[in-house]
Each structure stands twice: as structure tokens, then as C-alpha cells.
Amino acid sequence: MIRIERASVPEPAALRALRALRSSSIAADQPFRIDPLLYSFPIREALQQLFHSKCAYCESPLSTITDGNVGDYRPAEG
Image (tube, rainbow, N blue to C red):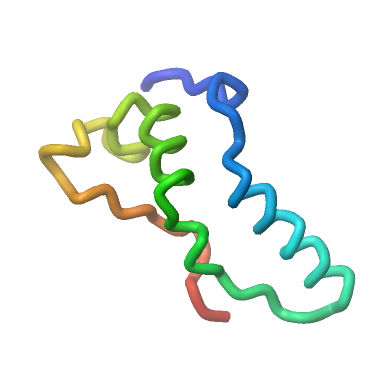
């Protein structure tokens, strides 16, 4: 297992915006839906840099296993 230092990659602005939107949804007691911005290029690029262009689960090079799909820990709906 490779140790990942999250602070080594700056947080993308799109992710900060989603975090603020999520916080306001929680404060307003409204459901938060996964925004397509979560899969935008700046976020994908940051993830690739953070995980050294390897899958975060199996550590295989991304070029050999996928086109770079971003996995979710939570369902996209609900």
C-alpha cells in the first residue's frame, strides 16, 4: 500500500465549491445531490496526481485498467 499525503496536491476550486454547496444543503435540511462537477477535469487531474496515475483501490496503472472513471463511496442518487 502506498501512503498518500492529501496535502501534497492542492484542492481544486471545483471541489471547494461542491463542499460549500453541500454545507449549505445540510444547513437548509435539503438533500444534496452529487454534482457532475465532481467528475470534472481539474478534479480528475488532482486525483491522478495524488494517486500517481494508479487506481486508488488496486494500485494498477490507470492506462491499463480504465479510462479514469471516478468511483463513489455513496450512491449518485439518494
